[in-house]
Length: 382
Image: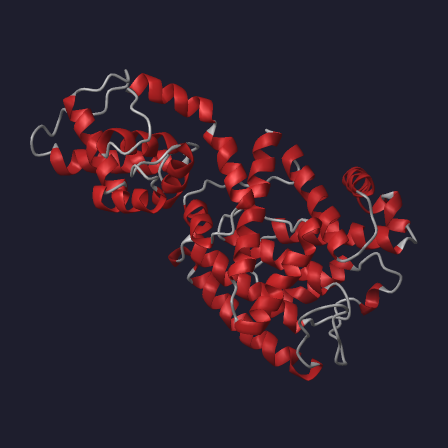
């Protein structure tokens, strides 16, 4: 279904209401009318769905959190409450207004509908998620989001890869412009290995070129994922480098991350740590359908950190870690992400927090916000 997940949930609850209340009464005559005109049975099923998804006692508790001095709430507060319950904004506002009588204005249905449209909840929702650091709010929102598959051969997929590689490069201080990345990707799509950039001696161009191919592999491959695939990712990343035969080789000395707040494991422990992490990844993939979206993102955030401190190669570790993260997200049917280079310091601080106290919350927030940013960009590209 292409309908919003909030609408799908309401429809499912509505039909459950029919099953529980109406099949025994009139088993052959409770099909929902396609005219849009609702009889008493339809209204009863709607009421059931509304009460199931927003129980009065819990709804009052949420209103209590945001209430003004008169014990009522407005549009901004209803937006937060709607995300908590995973229901549409309009349904939440009307329920607060008509069932609880706790909306800040006394309006009839027509007037309230006009006010909801004027409010532009989609725009306000984006502003809310851009500014919030409330993980509970973000996880509630992401658990009820609808995700589209990205086709890298379509314009939205092309734009995503271009943005990903540009920001990924800048995070690693590879000096390429957005225009250069776009040109490299366009020439690569047209000429493949005969692209003029494949023969470049410019290190920045070479790394951007390899990064494009490495990320495409992570987003398109049908191979099973395990941690040891990072050797293949490193080879792809440096396939155009002057000495590609050295790509995919684990480091053989202890290393320090330049300017980093976390430091990698000793090189002698790399293989053992990889083997431990591989068992975790295999178990996660085998049980992938048991996790909610937010639970899965929490796990992915921890794996992201674990690969970061492995730091198995002399170079390319950050880009490979983020590529592998997108591979993991794809397996759950989630859209891929990129870390905005303007948020580089926040991203490094998130990894530092995990290193210090095991707290993955900031990295989860970054992943979820990045996911919402990408979904917004994809929507605008249609």
